[in-house]
Length: 263
Ligand code: GLN
Image 1 (cartoon, rainbow, N blue to C red):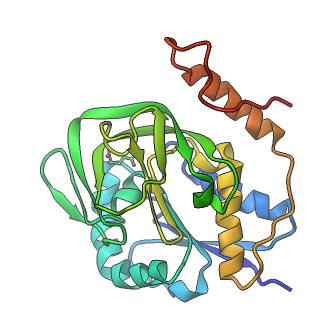
Image 2: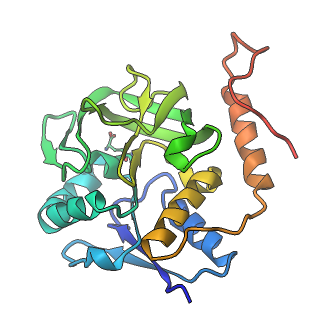
């Protein structure tokens, strides 16, 4: 029998904003619906972590002040080992403030520089402009293990502008909203099986295909074949369709830039 999936939730009390905990709920609930045992371990400041005992890592977003409280602990205590685990294929999802700390550094709008662990070749510069609102991106199918591109929706709220190094693959392309930096059309980053992005909202309840891709990777990491029984996602699909309808550019009402399926 497959052992319980183990999910590490980094700094859940400091880095949980705009419903990011909903991502943990989506992961665990979709496991339970399928009879897959799952265990979530919160990683608090000062805690040691045996990364080899985990199948998936989640790191939510937080305000600059929350990031400042945990950044040094994250880098010193976990940086080298988590980078090695990611390079070894450990699946991870990091949102906004957590994503920024996977890069080389986050420089706040007051000029303070918080070092990150450098798992992603990227850096973030805090600006005066907040990039806030609903966001839609296109994610290539191969990023999600194959199939059609996914149009994913979420909610972003950040002043940090993230710039990816040459050769770093963005998670997706912005079709409505701001994304990594509001200028180059990229959103998020993918390195091995680690995903960083600005989509709160929460990302995983709204985009169950992404959730299942992470669960599939986690199951394979735990020694399984990654196969998942299908679930009925018609409510999630309908909710996403409503948001995409709302984000439709007004100047092009006759043309849709996403496939809408209504059930
Ligand atoms: N403090 C960061 C920024 O504003 C991250 C914000 C967040 O996680 N929502 O860029």
